[in-house]
Length: 238
Image (cartoon, rainbow, N blue to C red; front, top):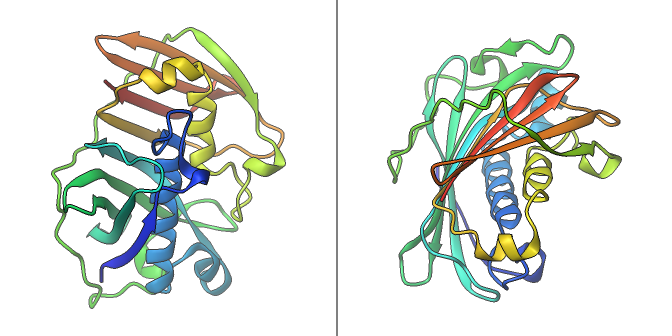
């Protein structure tokens, strides 16, 4: 199944340059993934209620091709591109009205048990052999992000509005913490090709996070740490 929605680059998702912001892009992708999962009856609310489990994003890589500007119409398509006993990958394409790609995301997810916090097999939340997987539209592969030894650039505290219905810090909020290390001028001038995020562990309300950042050969590398343990890594390629 391919979930399709049509929308515009509205005021809530654009940045200071009147283009779809990086945070807005991740918001659009997250919404499409969760709505696609809802159509499949595999959304977080359903699996929590019926299977005592919840989904977590483990990796997300987004390629950026062409900026969307305020008021511009575009189509979002989201679909499951791979499935294994341990994980699922959902791809999301943002397509401009002329048919060209604006951005493409590949997001890896797994199921955790609500009681134990351990990884569960995807088959335990109602996925069987009849499940249909669609062919990816863009070649995507995840990198090994080396984020050791980076200097600290900022810190953040997980507040109530950063927490989602799984009661942990929402995946997009980590990107907000990272992009807050740039000035407005830097963000409007940032020419990004790819953003890759690796979610290692979870953070909760009240947790104090240290944001570490380094710049290497046209790439910005981030590490988010809690109690000196890495919970998120990110690679931004320019």
